[in-house]
Image 1 (spheres, one colour):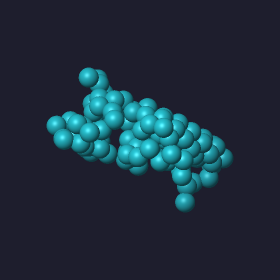
Image 2 (image 1 turned 120 degrees about the vertical axis):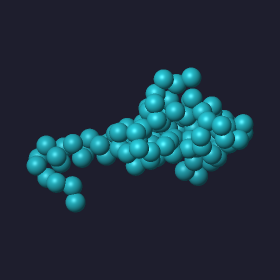
Image 3 (image 1 turned 90 degrees about the vertical axis):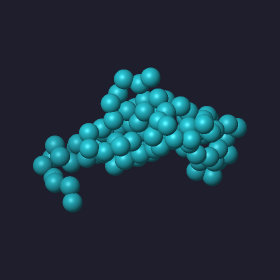
Length: 98
């Protein structure tokens, strides 16, 4: 069981623990919570769902949904890390976001 509490004032961007969704999902609720906290702060703030629901990601069909999930997570995390770094550089220059 994950030790991470849900964010204050809002729920996770996926089904609750007791939902039937988890019976057919390729990850458990606790794994999804951990995946949520592995995201960048920007992804969490935007309510980005860390779970992929298909073996196809960016027009590539993966041999299993676990491979698609891995590619999706790596791609999204690197994209948002890059965006956050750009935002920090703009803030360091004194530029406000528009």
